[in-house]
Image 1 (cartoon, protein in one colour):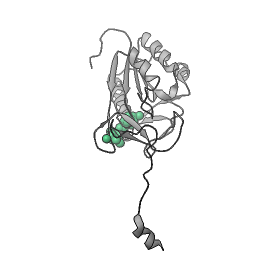
Image 2 (tube, rainbow, N blue to C red):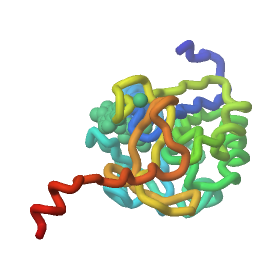
Image 3 (spheres, protein in one colour):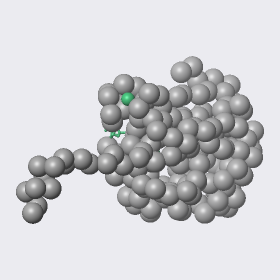
Image 4 (cartoon, helix red, strand yellow):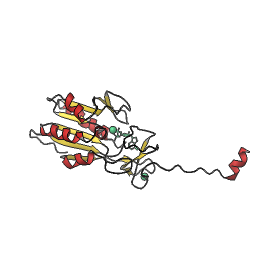
Length: 203
Ligand code: ADP
Ligand code: MG
Ligand code: ZN
């Protein structure tokens, strides 16, 4: 990725399904900024307590200290305006207000790196990522590995039945699926058929 040398801010979005390496990629970019001795601040939504409340953590156990925010406004409240790079993980959990906040930060000269899901558990575009993609200078779409067939996976398959749009969870509740293995909503439990012989054994 070509990084501008002039003194302006910009938006970078990293999107894709769960397990596709968004948090790993976010941390890789933030570490490089730290190596370059830039002032870096990292945020995650307070609702995301999956592995830690004070760190962003990847499914491969990479971690980095972070601040938590209840909403997008919480980011502005905790912002050190000297920060040159601002990373935000799991932007889907911060609501639509994160678009305005991200624009404000980029307009004020910061490199803003945002990571989040681009589709929901039904495969629909998942706000606010589509709105951020339209505004971003740089876009990275990452794919996971389909847990059914090994193909590149763009979908997040919900395994447990729940009608809520946002249900925070990881392994066991969700898995990555490719276009052909994805079953929107929850996969239907296959009826197990043990046949007559199994019934006979139970007698
Ligand atoms: P994301 O933030 O997109 O959910 P993470 O960065 O937290 O993803 O985790 C990516 C890591 O998850 C991979 O490097 C790999 O070690 C692990 N992983 C587990 N399941 C999968 C999968 N189905 N496809 C790809 N990586 C997976
Ligand atoms: Mg992540
Ligand atoms: Zn598949």
